[in-house]
Image (cartoon, rainbow, N blue to C red; front, side, top):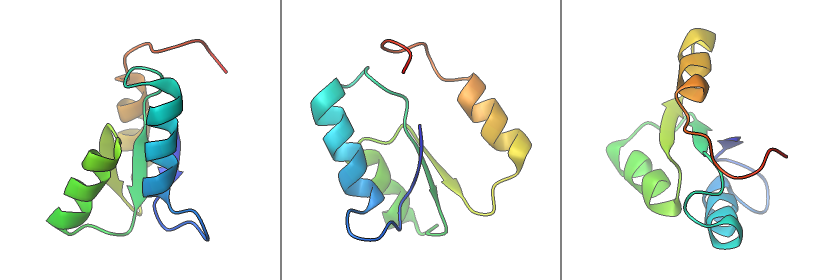
Length: 77
């Protein structure tokens, strides 16, 4: 699942934390897609439960490779 960090209301960090709580560590592969590229932003995304932190604008090939590298997790939605 690709999630933007800067969402109105409930930000991407909270979305990731909620998904990890609901689905467990292996329930979903989470990719943070954000314009926030400071090392603290990357750390915060990983601590929130994201597997990867990608910066906008992301090259479509990089995103495709990232998603293809995701381990099989949980049941398809």
